Length: 482
Image (cartoon, rainbow, N blue to C red; front, side):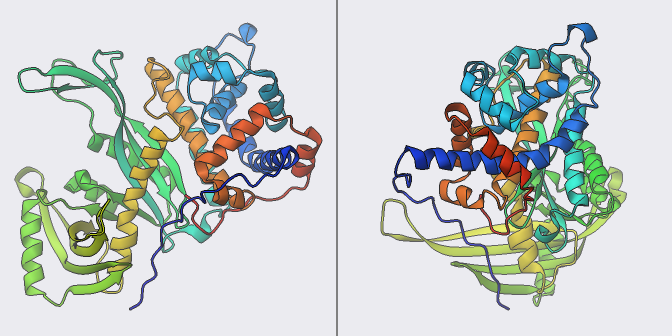
């Protein structure tokens, strides 16, 4: 059986600017803003309409900026990756930037002070509604079948993983989690915010935020050692995912932390497929049973080449797993092992090194030689994309770990605004209207150039309005640009 695999995207060309003079540069910046404005004009209005329905906690007579304007301002902070309150005040209030921004976002007559948004987020009674607006936008796109051609075997693949937002050596909020770090005998308390993230992974490389669940310790008394944790948060986020995809075919990909009975039971109750990493030191009895079955059913094996890697698969069907008090609960699933080896040139050397590694997963569907390559090499390994996505949010402009506010409510609000901005940027950079620009510059440089165009170029307002009037529809590109 022949398999096709996705090759890595080539690097951005290392060359000088293609613009020969100022006129060409100005024309290119104008074209970039025109194209992105067309996309924003189609994505943002439904979102702003949803945001306008969030109850405003402020006194009516003292309002200078509508709440929708403030929330849009917060989204633009992250959209253009100016993700700092101080930097936003310094750079986004320049006259040229304001005039250009008004062309693209007419709702922004003036730019508010960053602290105004912070105070609003502190006071919103149910800040979770900001995230609900993003979820509704996602559901709208699903209903409009925007992702129909980019599903993985006609399934929505959802990856879930947790990550730390930031930590301090003092308790800044009653909601934060506590741990003890340092050498033995010198340990001290550390307090941190932790988030469980769920993303939708499409087959053309798009990774869209679906939901965030912040671990919250407020409900746990200080007299006990119990705290909120990833698994507890998984049960909460699973309900959200089910409400977003009530009848859709769904595949969950998660790491070894979730290889446990309750998680598997939830997936089965919701009729979800799943691929869960099975670590060597996890579920000892399952490992013993699976390896015993593999020895008895030696025909359950498959070999293939994937690029320069040779893969050897073995699997065991219908492995029983007992859990709970006295093992009264039972689940059955398949266990698959992949032994992989390849040759690799060492860094700073011409020497070739032979490498080996092993992967193992729990599968929610029956494994056979016809589906094993797809389920393991593509579907299960899509879990790595959420790790790359989190790293992007931490280190490439979205400032995931930056403490924009020590108020827990405001912190959550900023987090949801950041997720909305990342959601919109994913749709933007994978749109046909800007595909060639993104391919030439790379995603990060494209967003930076867009910001620089808005900040420093004198744009032609009539040209932007003419571009909008053409009513070009944005479509997702079939190839991968990330």
